[in-house]
Image (cartoon, rainbow, N blue to C red; front, top):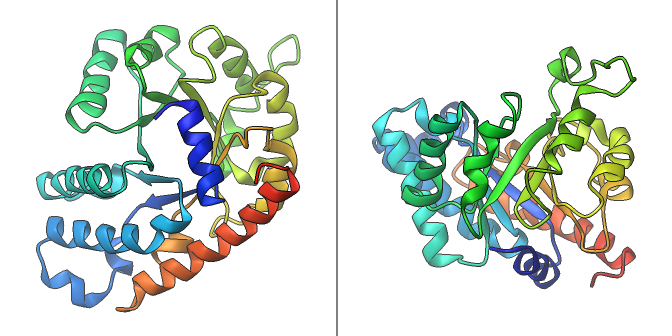
Length: 278
């Protein structure tokens, strides 16, 4: 999926919602746990996807929630991607795996996710430098989603450290990465709980898409994110995971997810109208 295709899907759906597929076994309905772990994870995802697809433009499975189950979990991840690709080909598939290593290793990570699993985008850690990111950018039509300013409490441990010139570490990442990719193959992770920094971030990347986690369960404000981060092309993918997929832990989980996604979509539609995008 290229930049214009993603923008068109946002306009068509009147939404910039990304649904995080992070199934927590403890929060899943007891009735589903009668299946083996891999089958249960996929069936849970399938129902969530079918319920929320009308309101979302992207889905983001987090690999940790699959890898912890070993081979059955990875098979559930693979089946989830295949299901999305077959049934919802216009939705962006982001693998939240936070890869990034020396160049030769990154090449194999890129091969795994962009060739074997065939996802559209992959979260990548930039802190080993350009040669650890470059292999992911070699794939036409694929996206690197670079960790920049995260929503967790510990983000302040390193990401706000200033150099002698007064620039923060996350700003150095933004500035350096502009030579690595472009707005057509690179996005940036910026936590919604750091919305006050979005205006500054847009000084570096005025036209790139930002993947914004932290709205909902983590307390980020959708309105603040849109105020400081939205561009004339929208430029935002706002992720919600727990607030949607675990809106209910009962057998009505899919219906509850649908309602939560629809509520966010309605709010996003209003913001897109205010921007003149729809």
